[in-house]
Length: 337
Image 1 (cartoon, rainbow, N blue to C red):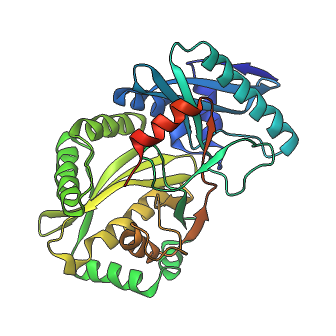
Image 2: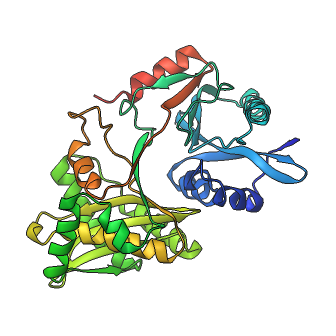
């Protein structure tokens, strides 16, 4: 077994595509995309008999010139065998520690957000980060629709109101189109900005979506979809394709013409197209835990749950603290109210 730090990730990306317990945020192209937002990255791959068996793409973000932290979204990736997983995890931590020792900055902590539903026994010494307390986190509870059945069976497993609203949209003549052109990105941004203002959330800038969609399109890893009614684009979604999953990564809708139920048909058509491309699951990318009725995501979660699907509850965000003083400063600076 050998640990290899490299910027050449062809074998790694192929390995990820075939591995269900990870996602696109461990892909080399995602790391390159995040570099446009100030993230650096390095990688560790573990091989046995010249085959990749695990590893991690580790992001580095510097909140201040003096300090930084490491972040592994949707990773690390470990083998199923617990004994081998322990060796791989230890090798990953050793490689990260070697990198930390060479840093000029103080590294406050290592953050992991693995796509695990159970915490392996080999993971020790990490602290759980409460959900929604920190901007540098991704959803830990999500909803996945099985795309392997027929479209009729996918409809049948939905909540009755979900099926009904899809048919309402069809009766009103709502159509779904794919448009990843510059105009499509601009149209998405308009709908997204209106939604962000309505909900009081901080919108991502146009450059974010321009760069993301251009990258997804060039790699055939995703696209932009719209639900249209009488020539108006009422709802939109940015979808990422990776391995077995298609992921609803960003979305927005307008308040106008709500009676035509455009967002429902939008997602059903995205499911149909993802299925046609060979993807087995549609990940709705974040829902409120079922046990938290007052969760800030309750409204969007009510919408998403109308599509049925399988609730997936992942382990919490995990932090390993290297420097307590720097970590406390990080928490104070990034605390969400």
